[in-house]
Length: 379
Image (cartoon, rainbow, N blue to C red; front, side):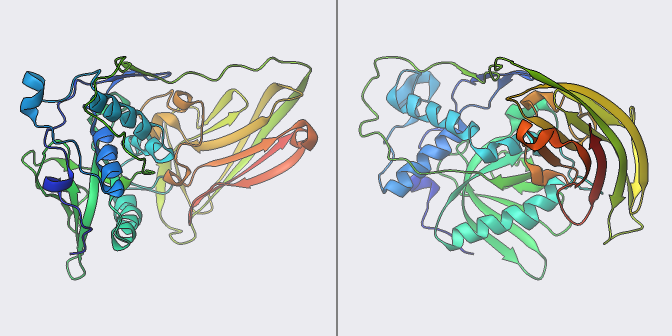
């Protein structure tokens, strides 16, 4: 039962996460409510742990009926800022991609269950074995509207029964101060059961990025200004356009492969992005594929690119399949949303110096052992 020297009663806050929900206005999604400030509280606890400083000794009764420091209190501001920090880490995108991924993977998409047990549990074990507690992102939501139901905690121990393959994770949950809580999952269990009073059932979890910061010296001093109430993610500002080139991109053929399971099949759909245009295959619904499946596409897309711009061609599992809504890819402007989540991802970029990639191309999607090869041409 390896654990780091961390105790929820000693190293955690004495008050629970009763902060008023904060609203994040995310382009393409809209307003998002978060369940208090679980990420901010978890990060602050880790800051104090690594700095070897005790947390402020506040009790719920110190803050009246609210039970937590009000906005404008230095501790509330500190927690709020770290809540924002927890959203703007590279790993935080998994709150979106894992929410919309299935529990059990298929030919293309890797499931939440498999990724948690085979990848994230290993990351946690390695961190704990080094004596390092880590923040964990817990997934329960299945749609973007429910993103706020996901959660953040601190993982500080684990256990693994090699005979039964039962996994246990010891966590500090800011919703239940002072309590040691475990997440457990048996060999054939798709999710993780929490031992706390809420008995929550989580789909999976991942180790979140975090870098320790030195805590402020005096968290009891009243601030001069209250904290902002809105998290705003702004769209990129469009660059001015100069001279332009006219190109034709032709998607010729798809070849699917799965050499480790040549008889396995799955119903999937793919979506390709050529500059600012999208091409879906098939146009509607899903198509059954297995190892060796070949599909003639014959889709032509005309694009204009500025001479100082980049022509980007990307592909991934179709948004309305993996993401449960047709505009899933537009939500984050096709940033690299967790490439490892699907073997269907690829990205290629061409510039004027590359002559815009004119000629024939063959690109293989990422992920092993399955995926596809797309053959296309630029003229």
